[in-house]
Amino acid sequence: MKMVTLKINGSEITAPEGMLLIDACEQNGIHIPRFCYHEGLYPGGNCRLCLVRIEKNPKPVPACMTRVVENMVVTTETPEIQEMRKAILEYTLIHHPLDCPICDKAGECLLQDQYMKYSGADSRFHEQKIAKGKLYKFSERILYDAERCITCSRCVRFTRDISKSNKLGIIKRGDRSYVALAPGDTFDDPYSYCVTDICPVGALTNRQFRFKERVWNLKKTDSICAGCSRGCNISIYHKNEKIYRIIPRLNKDVNQYWMCDFGRDYTLLHHPQTRLTGSQIAGKSVKYDLFLSSVAETLKKTGSKTGFIISSHATNEELKEAQKLCNKLMITRIYKKSDRVWQPDSKEIEKDSFLITSDKTPNLKGVSHYFPSAKAMSEFKADGLECVIVWGSGAAAEKLTGLKVIQLSTMIDKVSTQANWLIAGRLPAEKSGSFTNLDGKVQSFKQAIQSQDTFDDLKFLSDLIEKI
Ligand code: SF4
Ligand code: SF4
Ligand code: FES
Image (tube, rainbow, N blue to C red; front, side, top):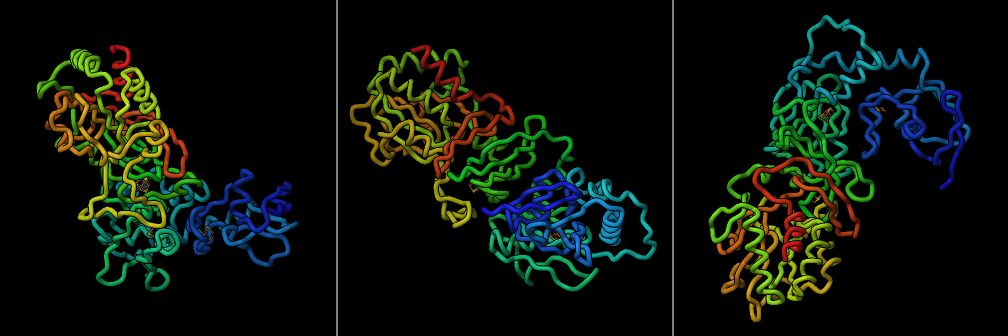
């Protein structure tokens, strides 16, 4: 890659030839304000907040539309440029409503933040503001407020260049323009929530999160999505052990700035009907210590006549511990399965050429690494076995008839009704560890929330090894 040398505000810098000036500045600690520019999108160049001066150029130029060349001389901080920024901010605010106290974007709104940083001037506009539509239902997931929209076109470029659904466009002209779908259409794009992340203001809102919490009240924990084998990097926003929203976290090698809508569905975690809790022996709740001793005694007796059906939701650390347990008990009949499979009647996408993969679990790759000789669940036979440990959901319950069944799982499934020993494990948001994604990338994540009456899978396996 050819590097060029240029001068910004009197200091010499080097940058790859052809890099956008706004990025070259950023890399060298000079932040240029922006609305329409987003690192993950092709530049639009329509807000003009990023104007800078380039020597010998008669007019100011947008830094997001200008590529660096050898010997370029740039100024980004002069009284003239500061005045231009103020003027653009004033212009942008002319028809903008004062919704901040009720707007979900407050606290992370580029208009709020950049007005405070680069302007702060009082409004001089005494005329009637143009009142645009407040509530366009784009879909079950997304609402659009045209009055708040600054027509930066980020959302339009996202659907054109990234998700490629081409669902959104800007219609009409000047101060009458707004974002719209084609007449009668809905915004059924599997990545639709991404437009709420990149909208610089609160014009596009996520109906899951709308009016639920102020962002500054939430804690953020970095995690990995377990919705499929892509392993998109995410941030979980939570408060009082409850998740309020999940947004993508930048990883240029995995998901860039994006994630699918399915991966943001955290309702499963707060769903008491399907979540398993506590520890039970023959359907009766028992204390953890009693449960542990009972399982250990059973396994000591069944030893190598125990089968182990591994979970593809298990972390690498848990798999390593499970490997030790198998070695200690001399278990050789090991099977792997997908804990979750795509359902054709669901609204979920099976796979696409962007992020969504057909393997709907996060760590089948890890299972194959730690248990290279594990057979597929379809090959499971009860012959010669006395007992089976079923880890996670999705095992073929009908094949387990006649066996003692020990299940460690987060969700209730068919196996749970026939398990003699049943213990509730934890979902990825409730534990820490690492997953190996489909490309073999090992990615670690931290625990975001604590769940009631569940047990850490890793601790359970370690305790079991110690007891046997
Ligand atoms: S809805 Fe948001 S992202 Fe889309 S054009 Fe308006 S301000 Fe930009
Ligand atoms: S593509 Fe897969 S890993 Fe990424 S957010 Fe969607 S479900 Fe999660
Ligand atoms: S950020 Fe450059 S024109 Fe909008």
